[in-house]
Image 1 (spheres, rainbow, N blue to C red):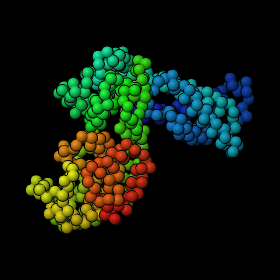
Image 2: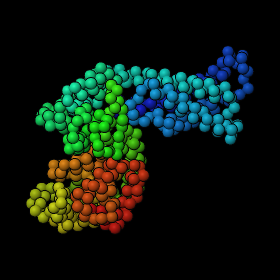
Image 3: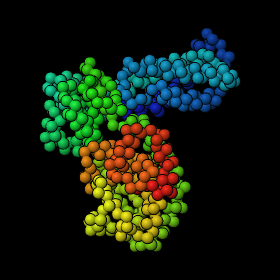
Image 4: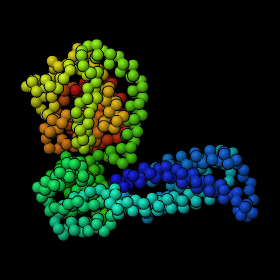
Length: 462
């Protein structure tokens, strides 16, 4: 259901804007209609062009009020819950408008338009939701937008869930496989292939009899493979930071989410990334030019390098950097692996790497070599703030549990880089990045970005 809800919420924002705009205009034309004018003479006068300008402002304010009222929360949407929410949201908007008129009387004075717009907006918004939800349910019944789920548990417990999903496609979940245990799942090469190819979204555990070790193994497996985990309530004695509770066939279901960075929060972070990135590229364009010239004059080879890195959910992407090493430096790496100073994890680091050029030492020390990653942010493969991006061969050496680092986009900077400690051991670096993933907020992103220049000056970035 998550995919369908995300699409519906994104679509509802402009639709609600247009709906409120149309509702207020409808109230205006209703007020000046002959039938109403005969019953209640017109005392209020405002030219249509002025009223349209005011209506745009009201519609924009409506979206802000609706957002704070939970109209676009990324939860399962049911029509029965929408009408009370609409009445509350439109009423709040009406109160704000009445208060604005009270403080500025010349703004508006037609009580009829305000009351009729309130009623018409409620009717229009509810009708729109009937239409939008009907379209959503139609596509879900046709198999579009369904999240793929694997059901675990004994046959009796999982049958109720599977039958409910099958009979009610509007729930938004489709069962692609069922197993007694996680071990049975791991023995199925076909299903493992689907999971590796990102064709499975969720695992649901319906058996409340599994022990704590099995439960923790299942949770770790889902985190490593970037799967949402749902389970029958009271199944786990352990706790999680991010829970969603729902019900299927009267059975309470709890969903564990690995990060609060989901739904609208993901949209906010994306917008924030794009705005700040465009601003930084504009301001730093002279630095780009000077650095590019220096690299070209210092040694033969390209100005930029494209390095293979592992991004969100294990996807390989090309990360851009200013070239700080000699041409074809990657070919020399196997020859110097014996000098790797990082023995605590999968990363490679060498203090006096012979492959680094003279200008390369400077741009590395000042982190100027990282600037082209701003174009990765524009391209959507990286974020300004996130876990450190690692090479595919490094990810292959991850110990169990570290794959949670791949649950969100990697960042140009992150908690590990601004921790105030250089040369962190890999386990500590991973802990900091996992803490960021589990406790993400826009404020945390802003704090890390503000700390980054300080960390660069102090030389704390590892």
